[in-house]
Amino acid sequence: MMSPRKLKIRSLIMGGAAQAALLTGFPALAETIALTGANVVDIDGKAPIRDAVVLIEDERISAVGPAATTPVPADAQVIALPGKWLIPGLMNMHVHLALNLPGASHVYDESHESIALRMLDNAQKSLRSGVTTIRLTGSQDGIDFTIKKMIDNGTFDGPRIHTAGTSIVPTGGHGSYEVNGAAEAARAVREQIKRGATWIKLGISGGISDTHGDIAASPFTDDELRTAIEVAHRNGVKVTGHNGSPIAAEVAIDAGINGFEHGYYLTAPVLTKMKEKNVWLVPTIVVTQPGARAFYKKIGSPDWYLDRVETAGRTHFKTLQEAIRIGTPIALGSDQYPWEPNSGTTATIREAELYVKAGMTPLQALRAGTIESARMLGVDDEVGALRPGYFADILAVDADPTADIAALRSINFVMKGGKTIVGGTDATANGH
Ligand SMILES: [Zn+2]
Image (cartoon, rainbow, N blue to C red):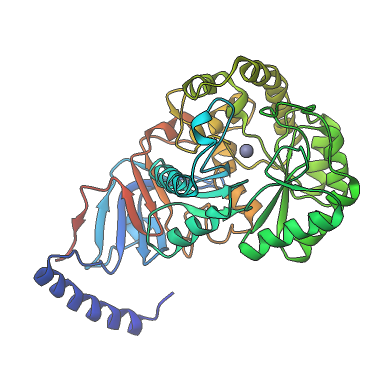
């Protein structure tokens, strides 16, 4: 929070900036942004604040409260959102910005430059679709670190990025950085962390898109797995495993892993152990459900792949239902581009809808895509809720998503770190 004196000095400087803007034709930055007229959803399930005022200074929220008790500063830039519902920016915890699946043959001989541009394009589309934070769970050639840097320094708009770098696997496993033996596993983990990885992704079981091996196999040796996790933890970095296998899950949980992706064939005892040990599940349920079929057709996926998706999908959905019933911690992730069209909405929003179909309340599903994801990342004091001090990552929708999760389909305003990305066109300057 800024002292009144500092605020006064700042507004004097900004006054000068506004005059300079008149001369140069560039828009001046307002001192404070005020979102008015909307209802603010309480992510902890308390009653919403109706007819709220949200004040934003620089990148962060400075106040949230009812209009009656939250005055709008005279020089604030007002963005009127009457009757809308405000929620935190969505968070998608399983993203590949340069997704590469069977059938999409054009991407196999793709140049580094082309991969980089495709990743940037997908990052921008993700943000515009309302996803303000993503976790990358396997990228190519360290390009993810460059994309993150260019977004963080403001060169390009895009979501906040947490990345695992390149995913590490035993030779022949589901992923791209192949290792053999504990020493190579340790080196691979250290290399990712040196480049800037804040997660490590291990391929601890087979994948649907693999052309060989069993999806339920557990190909890492205990020694490799334990060493990879130990090295990551010694560096304060969490580890998630691509995993559909209960056998691989047991070993990895004992070795202290922090999360599993997909979890296709996980059993009730494993899901219960995950709850006890606070091991996260990122379901990516959209990829095995019928809504993704149009996407697979579009990229020309072969029949054997579609068959494997369908077979895995039936068990996958039952596993998700079981995880919700047991109370395994769940963070939302789609494994499709966050903005990818799916069932008339985006993959991110469809993922949340499927959580409700599988047994979550709408509030639980919204939390999985906001504050629970933030908790998994360890940034729940900065993103995932609309509170003073948090980054102003804010969406507006037409109805209350805690009453009906499908309200997320109506996102019509997107703000990241105080910068309006979508909507807010009826913004009016107040007091100038
Ligand atoms: Zn994936």
